[in-house]
Amino acid sequence: MSLFLLTFLLLYGGMHYYAYRKLAAAFLLPMPAVVSVVLFMAAMVCAPLFVRLAEREGLGTVASITAYAGYIWMGILFLFFTASLAIDGARLLARGAGLLLERDFSPLLPNNRQAFVSAVLVSLAVGVYGYFEALALRTEKIVIETGKLPSEIKRFTIVQISDVHLGLIVGKERLQRIVSTIEAAHPDMLVSTGDLVDGQMDGMQDLAAELRKLHTGYGKFAVTGNHEYYAGIDHAMDFTRQAGFTVLHGAATEVYGVLSVVGVDDPAGLRFGTRLPVEKDVLEKADQEKFVLLLKHRPVVAKEGAERFDLQLSGHIHKGQIFPFGLVTSLFYPVRTGFSRPDKLTSLYVSRGTGTWGPPIRFLAPPEVTVIELVNSGR
Image (cartoon, rainbow, N blue to C red; front, top):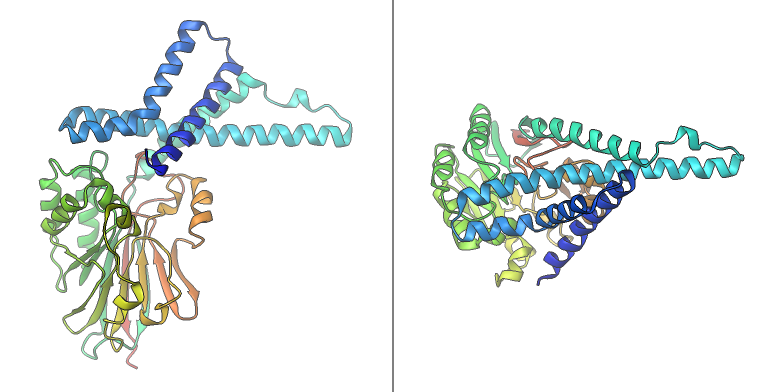
């Protein structure tokens, strides 16, 4: 069993145990109810694994039903866990204040049943809202002035998608909305910064055809994310190429004399036997006289080679996808979403992601298609 899988099962199982303890403290459950709840929770812990197994066996309907049930439950459980922790924290603070002030605040505090019901209602309300927020695709636009564009190019439009996670949850209807949003931006170039796909590739031909409809004057480029490897890198790359993208595996390419695009593979490839070149060495292949665009799934700016690109486009963290999970991702990736300058040498844009992973829910992290306008400064 991989360390990632073991960690996931321990954490996710722990959240279920916490929820069960809250339920048991709120209601006196008869033994048949206890057994039913435990069996249901055990099934939900294993649901993501069942989804992968069903996909591999070609059981598309079973995989789809299990995915929706399991991942919606995952989102609601996380929201319940968060709400319950907040209530527990408030009760603990109130009791501490009571000890300091020598006052009894217990009549003002919710009992176990009230706390449980309140957390359930909050998680359901936020879950419903978050389901619709996940569908509310936004266009985020940034403008960058540069003196590195050819004199005849006054404005160059790059559209970025990231973390679409096409598969059982994000399907044709969602993709059509994404494609329409991209078309409305009239991009000169389209880039995908990883996790375009999620899961097995069976039945994905229609999705590739939707993306293949997108035509840009200067091409479509993509790099791998971690989920391309989880889905099966060969199948994922076949899909990406069928969708009309040129995949950059640690490579630099010049785009019709206008700019240089550099793409690096996700480090997840190391666990699957992919050899990753040194990023600095790849960047050295780019023409420094032109605007250098670096496509990199994870929002990590390497110290070496930072002076060799003008803008890095990344994704991966989804802005946490469901608040307050973004507080957890910030421990591993201490960069903010959107545009930033981590130091004087580099510019970084981190997308919130265009689709969803796992739960079809977003809360305070709406999906986006990013439009980057490069404007010729004339210098």
